[in-house]
Length: 173
Image (cartoon, rainbow, N blue to C red; front, top):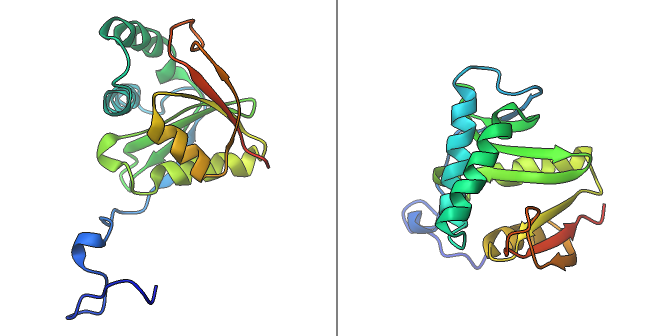
C-alpha cells in the first residue's frame, strides 16, 4: 500500500510489521484415520494445544471429559490435514455433510494462513457450509465472520448439554 511505512534500507515494510514466513503447506485427506501410526497422536496434540490456547472458558472437569471423548474418535475421523514438506500435520479440519465440525491449528502455526487455507478448501467443496463456534471463543467467531460466515442462531448449551453457548454460522455460498 502506498501509505505503508517503508524500511529505508530495503524499501520493504519494517521487519516488526512482517508476518513470519513459513514454508508452504499442502492439504491431504486422511480418509479413514491417520495414514501413519504416529499421526493420531499428532492430531490429538494439535487439538489439545489449540484448545488450551483458545478455550480457557472450559472448567477443568469439562476439559478432561471432552478430551476423553475426542481421544475416542478424532484419530479415526475423516480429516483434511494441512501438512508441511515432511508430511508432518500442522492443522486439521473435519467436515460432515457440509457442516464443519472442527478446525484446529497448532498454536505455534496460528496466524500463518493455514486455517484460512483449510477453510477455503472446505468451502470449495461445500459452498453452503455451516458450523457452530463456542460463543466464548471470540477469535474463532471473528475468524469465521472474516471468512464470510454469517450468524444464523445461538444455542445456550453445547452439543453435549454443557453450559457453553454456541453461535450457529452459515456461509452464504
